[in-house]
Structures are given as C-alpha cells and as structure tokens.
Image (cartoon, rainbow, N blue to C red; front, side, top):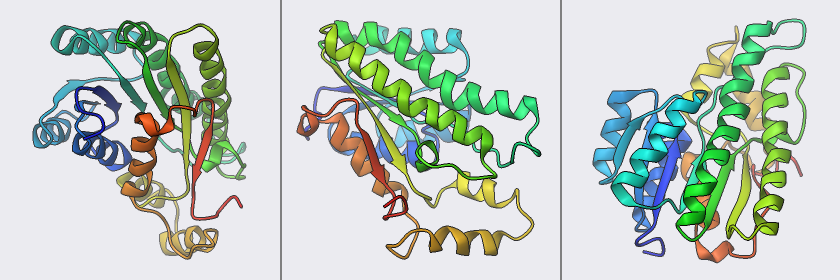
Amino acid sequence: MELQGKVALVTGAAAGLGEAAARKLAEAGATVVVTDIETATGEAVAGSIGGMFVRHDVTSEADWAAALAAVEQRYGRLDVLVNNAGITLMGSIDEMDLAGFRRTLDVDLVGTFIGCKLAIPLMSRSGGGSIVNIASIAGLQASANLVAYNAAKAGVTLMTKSIALHCATTGTRIRVNSVHPGVIRTAMLDKVMAQVPNPQELMEGFVAVHPIGHIGEPDDIAEMVLYLASARSRFVTGAAMVVDGGATS
C-alpha cells in the first residue's frame, strides 16, 4: 500500500491503459479519480475501485479546471497525475487532412499540456508529487503512416522534459516523466486495426517488430506508471521510460 493516503487523477481511464493504471494505483492504496468522455464505463471503473468519476474532455481548459476543482473540493490534494487520454489516427502526409492532424494534437499533446499546467499549482500545494505522461515509441521513432501521431507524441516527449526541468528548478517537488509503450493490446489498438484493409497483416507486423515475440498488455504499462508514481522513483525526473519489448532497441 505504498500510495496510501495519496490522490491520483488518471485521464482516459474508462478503458485500456488508463483503466489498467487506475486499477494499479488503487491496488497500491491511492484514491483514484477516473476521468473520461465515456460516462457509463468511466463510472463503472471508478465504482469498482472506490474512486470518483469526472466526465472530462482533455482538450477543454474549462473541463480541466472543473475536474481539478472537484478533486480539491473532495480530497483537498492531488499527488499523482497520469495524462493518458489519447487518440491514434493513421495516415501519411498525403492521407492526413488538417482536421485530423489538429484533432490528434489537441487530444494527445494540447490536452497533456493543459493538464500539467493546471495541475501543478494544486500538486505544489499538496506537497509535490508525480506527473506521468503517456507517450509512445511513436514519439521516439517515425512511421510513414503516423504523421499526426508521431508529431503529437514527439511533442509530449520533449514537453515532458521541459516541464520536469521547470519543476525541478523551481522547488515544486513534482517529478515529471513520460512512458513510451510499444504496441499494447487495447481497445485503441482495435480502432487502429479497423482503419486498415488487412488487420491480420497489420497485427503480424506489430508482433514482428517486438523482439520479445509478442505485443504488450495494459498491466505492463501500469506497472511502470506505479513505479513512477511511487517514492521508488524519487530520483527519476525528465526520463522517457520505454516499455516496448525491445522494439526500439
């Protein structure tokens, strides 16, 4: 129960990596605030782990302000923020339209920026804590058919380092790190598969680029989130933690 007495907020926690992270943090003793645009499933996850659900569009500054105000009013503190909400739109520079590009950046990059910016004051008042931004190996290496996602996750990667340096040098006692999953078996992966004419061929390609011989599971990422949220990682900030079965090795 290493997070006993701590309060964590996880975005996009109604399913997939966010749900796995929320459950893992709750198992470690944290009180978890589940946020998502999917109300029914989000409420179900929050109820099952004894947490609170807030409907929350991460692209909205007003929604972020309301979510954090609700956390402060109910719990009086915030110790862990996991910026997980995201989308993946496949497409090359020829195929991606401006609306899709902007939408990807709004959710994956701008949403993370707003969350960090607005959460830092509350976390500082709470005595510090840990911000974990879920990026991707797509933020470290490019793919021809992921122009928007590459741009967004690369932005998260360096933005995380910038925020970490700011927090480290201004005495906020907040550590900020990014997690870079390989291909993980989630509902988001199913949505990606639905965007291509031959999903089986795509899956075989995904497996092939992971030397470990298989794609990952949500708990593989949740374990890293727990490590970064806990005092075990007290000397870790500004790091890009890669969890990818050797894909970028």
